[in-house]
Length: 106
Image (cartoon, rainbow, N blue to C red; front, side, top):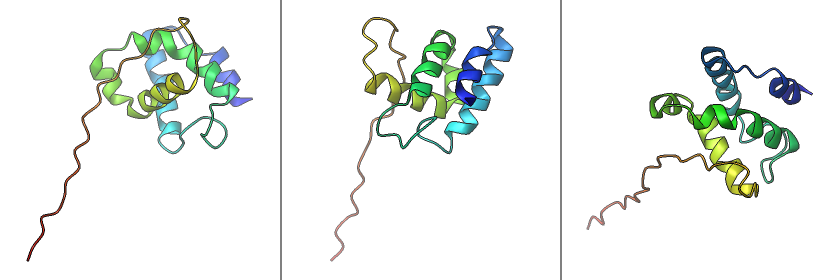
């Protein structure tokens, strides 16, 4: 299985780690989750999340901004799966949503 292999060989070296996260970011640009329809995280999503968590938590804000799809995915997985106290929450800076209403022209 592709994602189990990804998890098994995920590098610990910081530059190789960021390269691997970049590759994951490209995949997640087109997908909500690694496997399945996205309604519930797959086992592959949970395994990859578990493996990359410590690397992602240590990223700078600038690095996190470059991995927008990985960060969206991490936020989704941690909101859907109850990890208890096993993993520290990955905190994301989220811009407030502002609804713009077109003016009524008479």
